[in-house]
Amino acid sequence: MEASRRDFINIALGGMGALGALGAIYPILKTLAPSAASTTEAKVEIDIDSVSELNVRVTSWKGKPLFVLKLPPDLSQKYDYKVRENLKNSAGKLNQDLLGDKPVFALIGVCTHLGCIPLWKPEGSDAVKAAYLHCPCHGGLYTPWGDCIGGPPPRPLFVPPQKIEGNKLIVGEPGFIEQLI
Ligand code: FES
Image 1 (cartoon, rainbow, N blue to C red):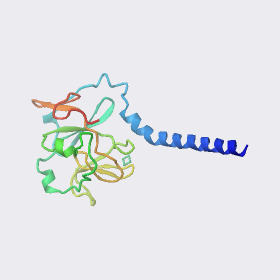
Image 2: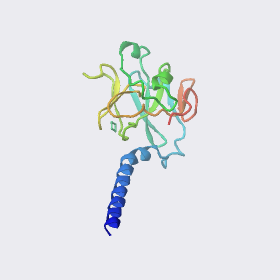
Image 3: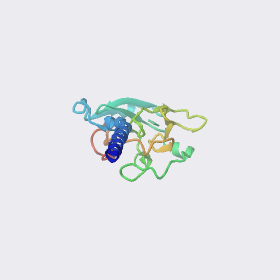
């Protein structure tokens, strides 16, 4: 009798643990799941000339916020971002390795920790003295290319497939980025 009572308690505790784990990863799964808008926003075109330097153009792709950035070419030489080199994207690289030489590029504007939307800080701050992305939820910090420089994010920001044709950045078609999601 005592054994079956203990079994019952163990099963109940196991179930609660599983529910807790599901609750923790649900925001991430929800963010990555295809949305109702997926079919209508499979491709987004942005006029490169309309994006001003050191500003983020916010739009959406497949129902997710999309950050389009145009950075000064010498930004990474002017400031040492102290990137967490061990946190790589799904290609096993830092985002900057793939985006650093592009005149304009797009990132998914969703924190890889628990799915908040990071804020763009073009002037930097006391902590980071150059442009960066700040996730206010738990203090996640990213370079302008989406690499991790602080806080709990476990990997860089996701990067959608994209290519440049003429003066257009086309998000949703593989080019200089195949797919890092
Ligand atoms: S959701 Fe961004 S740091 Fe937690």
